[in-house]
Length: 203
Image (cartoon, rainbow, N blue to C red):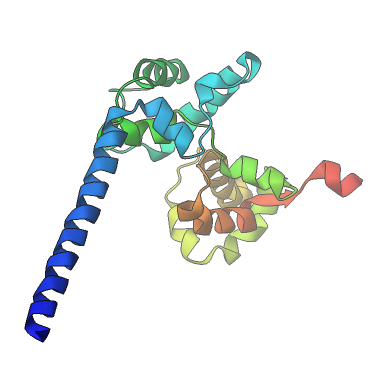
């Protein structure tokens, strides 16, 4: 009796497993049938191509700067230098395509509204520090970041050469995209590259 019950239970579990597996497969296939545009919106993303017209060019320019910093083989959408217009055209052309893995991954990276490190500074009432002399004074506290900053080439920084290197590093990283996975780097960026927002400081 108990053996029969056990076999019945295993059969039910097996059927349940098949059911869950079938649901997961069905969900995956459904996503592949949906347009990338639909999938991105269902994830809560806003599309850059649907921003008000007067804000789009600035947004695409921002994406192009981030692209230079963060593109890899999996995310590459063109050869050579990829401009803001190239990215815009790629997104417009592919946003209605079916949501298959590679295209979806690229669209989720380059075709949606996001925040850069500079944008995040603004929400923290901070702004980018651009004075090489001030940044020179922060150089000694860089810790393990110092090795990365030292790789930066500058033409002539004089007595503030370390400050000029850090300034260049900060300016480059200001275009990085902010997310949960990059927040650790953002915290270092904020510590070494920012100052109080002049507007909020004066108020």
